[in-house]
Length: 276
Image (cartoon, rainbow, N blue to C red; front, side, top):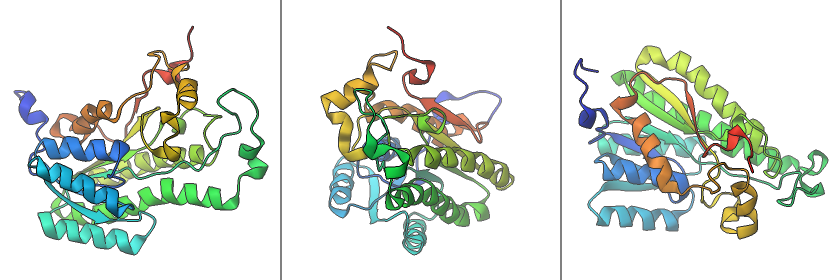
């Protein structure tokens, strides 16, 4: 950073080759939108080809430089190919948002704070556990591993990982496998920050609370489920994906040049505790 701080330049991401996983909806789409709207060259990836193409077409129609690639983040060979194609298309990999994830629910409590046997540990299936760890934690390992191949040779790069406030606190109405997966993500980010700083690569995590997305089958679009999260939030509401764009831009831009290994919570104060 220069001695004279230039605010406009500090948040400048124009021309940066950016890849976003889970970009067809929700937070991933918000990351892709803000980067594309600010002039970055964005590769949107998602496992859903139809929704992905719709979003690529929508952003292209408003003048953004975007492309799409179908990606199952648990498929390492596919991940490597998608990164190669993005690098070939845009000439580099500058910013990566490791965002894709799932919730395999249910939790051991219902939204009415009653015990939910289906979510208790003895009834959590091995398949649900494996899916959550693979999609939420191993996928981040896969994404980082693919990204550094292109970032190390040029001595720079930003990796922003979607963690969760569930990495820090327990959420009894969310499926149990989700919590250790996200806690693992948070610690992986810290470990990678130590390792990758030498190569000019900064990695940080965004830890959202409740946002209106399609995770867990879009459960927050159900008024009863949504209320269970709203009543525990000091602001009395959940967030829209647009509300994460400022933080995403900050972590992808020169403005965060001294931020490394951080996990920034954006949850409206939910972690502070419930108030009347």
